[in-house]
Length: 370
Image (tube, rainbow, N blue to C red; front, side):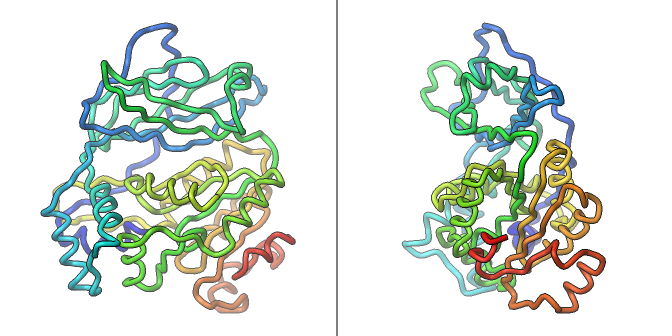
């Protein structure tokens, strides 16, 4: 979502933005005592994204996806100045003393220099694993098969810690989490922008202001509802059209606002010098594959899909419910547009779906009773 609005600046700056297709994760074996370490430079940074693990059919092995990103932070005054001028000219927005720290960090992340052919060694559940080399987008992915006993010995609060084995005398530390999700139960798959975070997608000026100049703000009552759901045993996954570049500020926001631990699934993009030939793919294209992957990973779980009325979450979720009626129990849509249940849009979107299967809400407190 955020990146789709960023297209105005992508076109002006001559950036090519393309979504990369999903890949089958490589199965990674433990290093078994090897002293091999990560291989990247001291001016490069590693991010380990939060993922969710699932048990195999026999209940003996945890399948643990690992996903990370290696990049060199950018502090380009020239590119920031261009974006600042565009925002000022288009919407009258410009960074001041209070907002400069948000603007600088988020713009720098969007222009981060992805690092290819870097080797990252991680440690998890008492073992070390060498991940596949990073691709041209700086990302690396792999899948671990961890025995249940090893996971049980190292799990804490339903999660596993993951850390990067640093090279040489590099004293920095990079770490992440894996959420352990049981085979059965209830899961919430949630959008982020205008669902749990105020973004104002229907107002472009507010959208850019919230994205680049303000601390991220919680949608009222959503963190409390999610915490109550967690206490009832619900697991969580966030699926958003925001780019992976903004994972760190988004993850920090979710933690600060008190949302439960959750795997995070964002849009895979590349920024390269070129003319615009392809428009940015819509969430109706990028979200379904990620949601379907979660449904297939947890075939015995029931899912609630939560989104908002600002863009196309109703359309996306309704189409998925038709394909997976046994797994998707409910659709909750946060009303950010002043819509009504009997509007033509919803009559069309949910035409052949029971009225009991979807809810349009404003106050999340009303969802607790459901």
